[in-house]
Every structure is written in structure tokens, then in C-alpha cells.
Amino acid sequence: MRNGIRIWGLAIAALCAALPGFAADTSETPPSKAVIIIDTHAHIMRNVRGNAVATVARALRVMDDLSVAKTILLPPPFPPGHPGTYGRRELEPVVRKYPERFAFVAGGESLNVMIHAVPPDNVSPKDVQRFQKEAMLIVDSGAVGFGELAAEHFSSGRGRHPYESTRPDHPLLFMLADIAAQHAMPIDVHMEAVPQDMDIPERMRRGPNPERVKENISGLERLLMHNRNARIIWAHAGWDLTGERTVTLMRALLAKHSNLYMSIKLDPHGPHRTSPLTPDGELRPDWIALFRAFPDRFTIGSDQFLDGGIERLALARKLVDALPAEIAPLIASENARNLYRLDAKSK
Image (cartoon, rainbow, N blue to C red; front, side, top):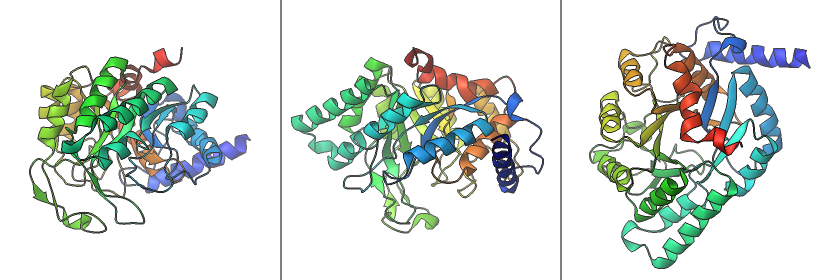
């Protein structure tokens, strides 16, 4: 068994060395001395046709090797009519079996569908009733938050990967903010940054993506202001498909909205213009200043699909190891414990 774990660990080390931003020597921070990570945003599989049992076993091995103490699982933001959706019903048994290693967030399979099925200016009392009922089922299920919910989600252009767009100040999101505040459960939002109406970047002009996208930062601010007790997590900081999610923009929003949080995602295959890491794997000075200005507002959210590779999670490990010692534990795990009330939920 030990030989098997050692071989798995060597395979991870080899993959890490091949990733952008990784030094060839990965022995500087052995797992036993590494700062513990709580990953707040990971997907157990791409769709319900995956093998959840096999994926969990594999995920636990990877988590151990990269010193990830706990992973919060959530469904992707599925659009209406999407095949192979999964969420609350599928994730709850996994967490029940491994409560020390996993927690879950739900709504990407249900609340997100309802939000995108109803135009913001045409929400009926029946829509409100259905939405509220599902939100309360999520509360009662033991979930630690709501998500993943999409406001602006670009399609990769591959397979059935969807384009989704709605206003961040959708009335159903306002309603969810009130429920989330009442039950101290954060909302995880996927939203590409669009500070003004703009042409979609050339590299994203494929599949169902439109040629132009509408400004959405003001709508996000209205959502944040609707209920200051609702904690909104803007996912995927550091992985930005418009090139507009700059440190300057994030700093301004964090300073203005005390209920705004961000989870950090890195992807070796994604755009790196607004990444916190340089191509050499060093932390950019403006990001260091941002983390030091708001040390309690960031978490790790790898966005790793656990039935696939480990590239994103490995880069999360690299980021945490590069953080200044005084803030690394906060961003790596302590903020996640507080934001999702993980210690309270485990009792």
C-alpha cells in the first residue's frame, strides 16, 4: 500500500514540475509541513454519468498528497434542459460518508436552472414559491452554501459546455440573498467581469457565445447591497476570460462591499493575464498587496473536476506555498472555516 501511495505521489510531483510556474524541485515544502488547504470550490464529476465512488477514492489520495484537509463539492451551474445534472441528492451521501473530508454546496442543478429559465422582469408568484421551496430543501439538507450560480458563464465551445447569462441583480438572486443571510450560508457566483458593454474576446468567439456581452459589475454591486448580511463569493479570481477582472477592480469592490469574498482559481491552460502568479511561479506584487489589504476575504477554490486531472489543485498548492507566511493560513483554510462555518456544521 505504501508503495502505491509513493508512486502516486511521485506522479503528482512529475505533473507539478511540468506545469507553468512550477520549479523542478518540489521538495521545498513536503506535505507533512505544508500549510493545510481547504478547497472551497471543486466538482466531483462533470455530469451524473461519472463514477462518484471511484472518484471519491481517487480524490482522497490526491487531497492527502497535496495537504488538502477538506474539499467543498458543488455542482456546476447547469442551464435548463442540460443532460446529466447532479447536485444535492448526489453530493449529500458522499459528505455523509466522509464528513471530515468533504462538505457540499447545492443549487447549481436546481436554483441556477430556475434563475435562467425566468426573465428578471417576468418572475411570477409561482416562480417565487418554487424557488423558495428548493432553497429551503438545500438549507435542510446540510449544505454549507448555495451554488454554483452563473451570472455570466462563457462556453468553451466544446461539447455541451453552455453559455449562460442573466443579471446579477435578478429578483430570484435577491430572494436567495435574503435566505442565505438568514441561514448564514454563502452564495457562490460564477461571473465573468464585464465593466462595460463590450465585444466578447476573440478567443471566446466560438460555440454558443454571443459577439457582445453586457456590463454586469453594477448588477453585482446591487446584489451585494441588497442584503449586507448575505455573503457573496465571486468565484475564479485569477482566472479571467475577459481580461477585465483586474486587481484594481477587485480592490475597489472589496473596499466598498464588506460582504464580498473571492475564491482563487488557477489553470495552466487558461488565460494568465490577471493571474496572481508570474510564468516563473512568483507572486505578483499587486496581488501580494491585495491579499495583505484584504487577508480575510479570499479562499482557495480550485474548480478542479475530480474525475479528471489535478492541474488546478496542484497550482493551488503552488499558490499557497508562495503566499507570505502571515497570511497563508488565512487564505488556505481559516477563511474557509469561518465563511462556511465548517466547525459548527461538523458538530
